[in-house]
Length: 359
Image (cartoon, rainbow, N blue to C red; front, side, top):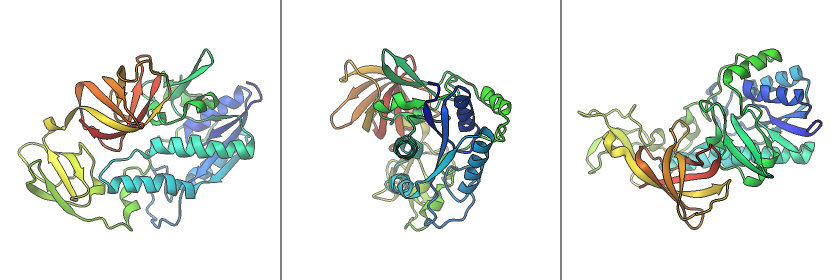
């Protein structure tokens, strides 16, 4: 592989920086690439330092420049703010306004990082390969490429990569797939990277996504029980998700949780915890990364959110990219709009899709 040209997606954090350092050490021709996503037509000035999007983007771009200088590698920043607005921000807002809870990271990996960013790098820089600091693995067996969980399962990020296309896998490298976070930080110190002790970056908006809706007609509405009895008022459906307990502002002898968000009625339906369990789910936008012998019914392990422990289930592939999952034991808070990842017993990612509803 010596001399092969690889684009490394640099975010300004320790994981991507170490990935670039390791690949350079291994003899690759490394070029750092970064997306500039912040659409300044969205007028909010609230600093969101834990976010990967927003007014603090300039700090990350400065960190990227410093990392590239320390590693003595070229780098290029691609302004993808228009595409990010159209593919991620608009999708995110639309989903919340429909009463669903989107996962922008899954969509960003598919549409932006491994999609448009690598496409730009390949076209403009001639890179053959693409690498990131994700904790996941690419495994080659008999000329076939598979996406698998990281050996360090506590840090595994394969859930966020479920929508990647199968034919992309042969071009992808995950240098951290067999490392622990402590090993990554130690490696960063070895290479004298200034981000060795940098704190973990957080999610899309650091939990502060309401600022994206400042120009939207967010209306208050009723919080009701399963029988339609009004228990209180909500401050707008964008502030709620399935399974949520905190911030409801209502009292009850037993704790209440969000069961459903009814966008048409502008209502948040709440219930007691025992009613939050589902026997399965129906999903759409199925993306397969592995061959299935019996698509009508096969056993797998499924993960319905990043922090969910995979559970045994039976999966059936339906028409039009739809699929059905039946859990061996009922699962808590199946959330429309969230992604579901489907794994083999050995940690190979079979694929994934988007949850439509719990059943």
